Length: 627
Image 1 (cartoon, helix red, strand yellow):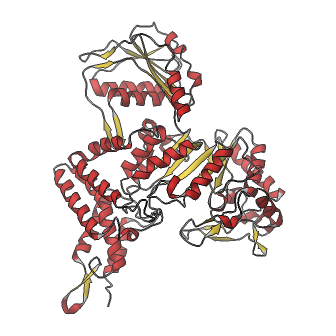
Image 2: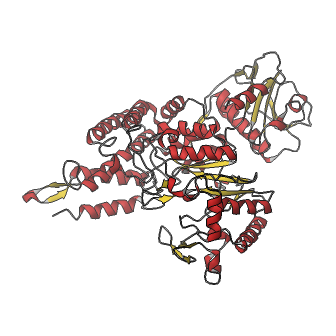
Image 3: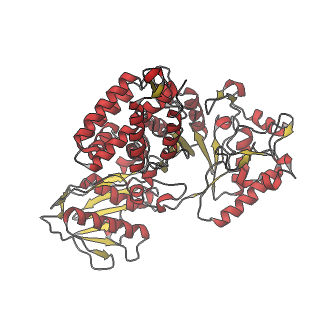
């Protein structure tokens, strides 16, 4: 970070001119025009039109667009690689592809950037930082009305903290939201052109069990005394997946993988990143040759590090000996591409005696980490592995996880660890960050989470508290202070630092004695009663507050289902001591279901269980009381 700051400060020393204020608009009038190159790029046109549009929205004045081959004027806004002396003197070539530069010079305003989207990012940064515009959510843009715009001297050069920044939330893939917050998409969502050819778990695509399983079992993993070239059902039961990994010491496997990879590259020549990575299981090859590679490059004995990704049986951390040896050979055959591979589950531990090629990307996954403590201190095993990788490469992409996968609408108090985690990753040579949130519509504080993470991926050192307060004020209006009170109370009781680990595969039931105790549930409901009363006259704000309350309903329902009877149970005793559905639980279920439907919530769990399915399943549960 110190190097980044020094670079930014150094950049500000170029072309310092006497401080001069600029009146872009004065009393609704302007002599300025927006100048683009005579043959502009797509990004330069887009940037110029965005600026023109927002200035019109703010002031009512639409500034004309002109090409730079027309006569120069004193008052101009220069966008991109404009042929003007002031712009040509800026060392823009030093900027990375997403870097940006905003500068005033005399009566001119200059906005430019790197070769990818730098100039567009520069325009959105100017609108936000200097004119007070905001993009809080896909459906919430704030554009202040102004009759005059006066700028003080500006020399603002910004570089991204991470070269790749993705926030995997449904709301974040709105095209303008992505551009405003400078985000990427590996799938090309939001019309953003993807640089990725293959993403993850690609062994199955690069060497198909259907094609080779029966005829060449030696291409597949050996363990338990035999080769494993079969298939097992996928997690959703709708297909098949390999039961094991490839045999990475087999020369024919290398040739086939590279052949199929080359064919895929030819179909997508613009893609830079290509994943050559393990299937989603821990059944690696233990043949003599693969075992020798793993042993040769092992930094630890496998039994010294035991992991348990999904909370089940633990398995030894083998390391990446045979995998990295294989991937390096692939990278040697494709020197103009970046070959990405997973450091995941049994391959998470960095090796000794072998380093990734310069064109190899390590995608390190934090799936095992607790979510209510910062990973540096709350998961010392992962932080040790990350630091180890950081000592041998700076081409690291972190796949981080920020939600409860099995319960997307459960209270999940991890907001306080987001910034410490991102800062820790940035300090340890991580160049790219994929924050896996909820790609489904809806979810606990989905818009707030997406906004905060998008901001931090560009600048990990910003004030999260300030960003959150601004978001809450804009998104919830008069109910903002109550929503903030709920967030504070929830996080104050999440057992951080007390040895209680919050998992991405957890349930609200796990927190029923801590942050979801009945006294706290009662306090949460009282807070939301006040919040809803504060915005009852505004349907938009009321719907947002009710969405924020859904996790409290959901936690109540899940705990009631687990308890069945008793003070928090789904059933109470009625006439003749027979068990009947608890009226308060039935009411919570109806409210939960209706608001999910009203706001188009897609799933209750990742890729699974629609609100209607959840309602019907719960109704069936209530229809079968205990005897």
